[in-house]
Image (cartoon, rainbow, N blue to C red; front, top):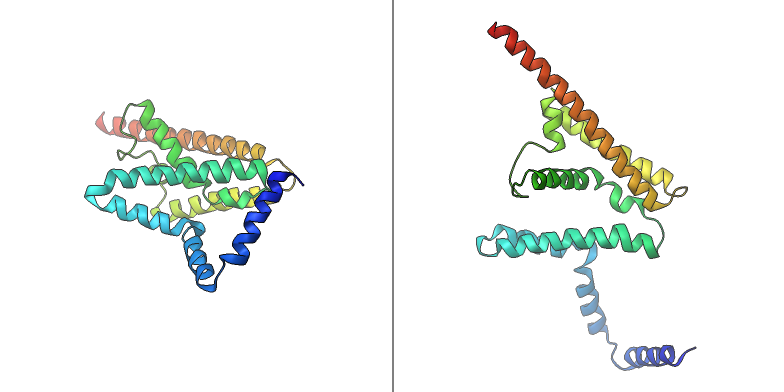
Length: 196
């Protein structure tokens, strides 16, 4: 054992023998629980966003939570720990959709937070799906990503699996765009024929 390790163990043993109490244990357990699943920080972020005076801080907090989630769960945990495909699988559809829409807005030089009709549910609505059908399709896509990742995780490196998810998501959006463009061109032809 190195001298540094022995010193650290000595400090920890001293804390355990002299500073640990039942009240202290319960206090620190309660403090630690604030971070479980991020519920406290998500709630605090929502409170900040809903208050007009702290909206900017709330948006900064939301971006920080998203960035922290991405770096921790998608990079660091995969780099140093066991594979956890279920950590991000359920978030693939909303996360990828938001990233795709923000990239579209950035490319068009619009505000990243301005509303538009580029989200995946708008695509399903525009190709003729009812809101309920669009929801079912999105849930089915999310289920498919989750199932695929959980089944393949023991056999494929998690980073390659994530890149595969991005490729599949991109291909899905290209297909939806083609269907949407085809529907729009048919609508234009029908309206043009009505005019003539």
